[in-house]
Amino acid sequence: MIAEKARFRSSRRLERVAGFRLPEKAFHGLVLETLSSRLDFDRLDPTTRAQLLEFIADFLRCGCKKSPNCGCPERRFAALIIELREAGLDHRQISAHLADVYGIDLFPADILSYLEDSVHVLEAIADVAALQGRDEVAAGAREHIRTLER
Image (cartoon, rainbow, N blue to C red):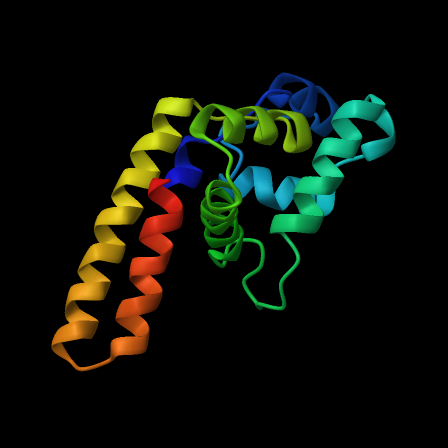
């Protein structure tokens, strides 16, 4: 999944503030738990603090009992990438957006690969839906394909 490749730019600063070693991966369980409960945000610079608070607001707010290790953050992140592409951003612009808003580094090539994989999944969904006579689902999948490929 694309969330596994996302890394925080400020991972070393987070380690210093947390007081223990943290993985660089933004959606690693320990990182998510640290952001949810153990981090003193007042010790961060204003830019990093704003990015992390935006990350928490957009990805870590759910009602699951296992939150933040429930899978919701990763699914929301994957959906955001699709939404940004459908809004007209290309893979390089999506990478820049993630860096600016959330402080997340994600290679444009990884984003492009994820988008290509998403198109293949949507094609399969459209084909299966058509075989089952679910024309609305097939049409919806094809519409998503068109917006991703433009």
